[in-house]
Image (cartoon, rainbow, N blue to C red; front, side, top):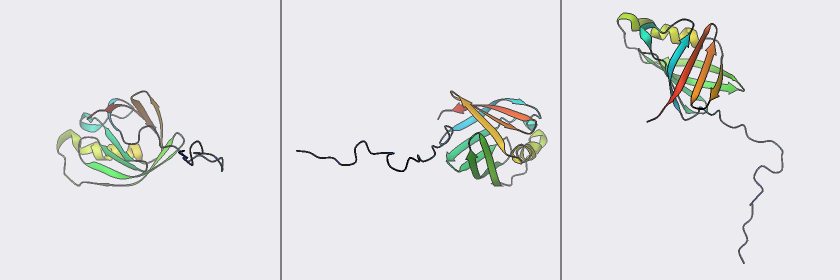
Length: 131
């Protein structure tokens, strides 16, 4: 006779389920449309979510990485660290665009393979990138 304990018990007891990770964690996205101020140099904005509390952004100049917190449909970014390359021409303003876009909390929603990030006066439609 084989006896396996614990089957069917997952989630029972306390009545509190652990919060699930947002659907974008572990994925990378690239912008297909920006409503509002455009990315200097044309971008596109590339966003990667390597872990439940980490984000990486690139809009054509330097890569920005940092911590994030997701509360429902609100995404809050902590201080971002970045590479420090000088970017000539139109891409020179891409880093300032990221800083302005992420300064206030963003709202997000996803539909299928698309992710929409909205900030003060700017909305970005991103589609999932596949390796």
